[in-house]
Image (cartoon, rainbow, N blue to C red; front, side):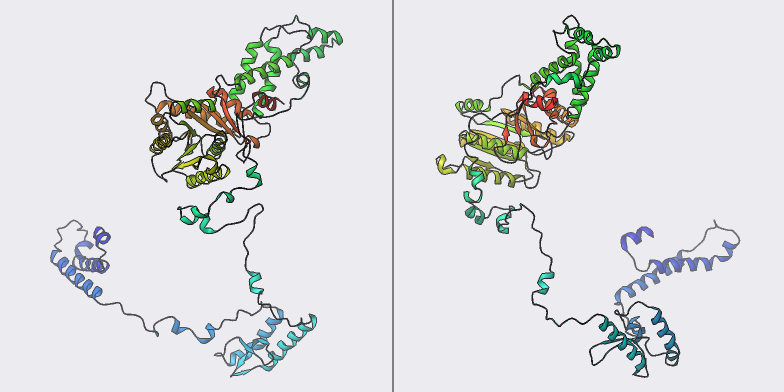
Length: 577
């Protein structure tokens, strides 16, 4: 019956079960009292009769519409007039109010039908409170007391002059939207709607919407190779190393008290460096590099390599142990950041032009590192060098990714209008919307660039975490199918140990999910947000140490011209200061 109740929702089940229970109890009462619980009870005929009557009852109930209650049967009819009076302006009870209630208690007993309180307006416009209605008349004593209180209150605080409210008083009370600093001016809402491509926006959008004095000054600044980062190297920096990182032998010498002769003894060229002498210096250098965002494992390996290189080496005349260790570490870091192979993109693009094919660059990385923004910076640099660029919007997952690239392409075309380039836009966007296969969109974009004789294709991919296997498999498929010339990993300069995990797993995923004998791995690094870290530049060391690939671009700001070339000496100088 429970199963039928779940499925059919019968209306007579409760009555049917009760009737069966009562009929069974009445018929076999004696047998049950005697303990004959397992007898052969013949209850078939009674069961059929009860079922038939219950079904008939159910049909009658469902056929008859539910009768509505009359007003007399409702709870509202039972409410009295006194219970429906609501006095919201009644003040909280005070000691005087209690006295009034006690004085009126006897009068209320004589007329129990009268309401406890009543509010009445007088001719003067005042509201009388706590007045009592007795046989239709108002108690005059209570009215006089209330008037006396009102007059005393008004005498204590003089009445203000009558002032008519201005018609704009209501408008002043309405909440106004907050205007944020540097928010700019809001244009038409129809213009800001990027869900579609209406004709209004296409017709009303010109180069004047994106050009001002600042943006016009950008044109012509990025011609040729990208400028390197600048830094000012302080003088006699290595001479201060002995004071910051004293060697163990020098500390022992001070404790023994050799004086002036000990100083010359530590500086002559007959002493070789031991690991014990370098340990306190290397420990402090290791901690210093970790504080500057170098990964812990990599900082330890760098110090170990310096110790292996210097162990047993004879010091030169007037040369301290600390300055020698630090100078060796600086040389190792500069050599690490210096690329083993030069990535000359301008030369490679010209070679691809001679082969009548576009030069393809793929940007990959985790979420929120600035792939689309730095792609636009690199696109501006390429346009400044007279190359036509096609941007492939292969981020088909993040909402607004296509619209972001469309805005960048309009800004770039405004800075370099088609009129100056033979009537053709120098930057074009290839997009197929959202939810599509990124590898297929990239292939179609490369084919279109080949047909339209575009010079460079910049492929923007969706951000993905290094542990997301399906998305990493999709990235490996995109690289395998389209065979790009350059795969750039976009990473933040803010991360420390996380940079190691990201690069290792990205490279591992590209190798594992590719069926080629020599899978295409990461070719270079784009280091973004470099202007937000001050002197904590250790992420550049960690990324380069893991992959062995060079840092091709460094993003240092918010404008298109904020793109630099890595200066190894500048990074090491910031790291060691």
